[in-house]
Length: 77
Image (tube, rainbow, N blue to C red):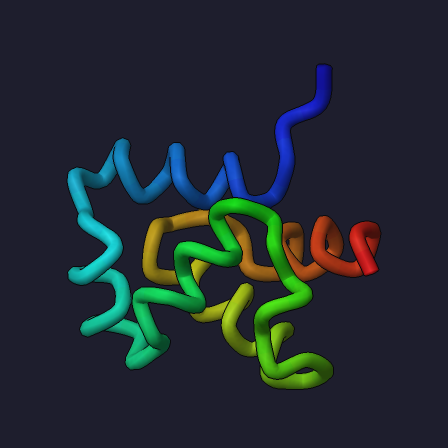
């Protein structure tokens, strides 16, 4: 079973001991949007380039490869 982008981000965030609120503060992305990303629920995000920016910033904040995260996101849309 393959791990989803949202799961990867959540696991990395938890491994760094960060809360959603802490990542939201660091990235300036709404905690609500970060929760949607962790749940792979991209329909509730603004869309387009904003989503890519959110994924990239989230990945960077939790120590994941940004380009790999964007690649995973591209596979979902």
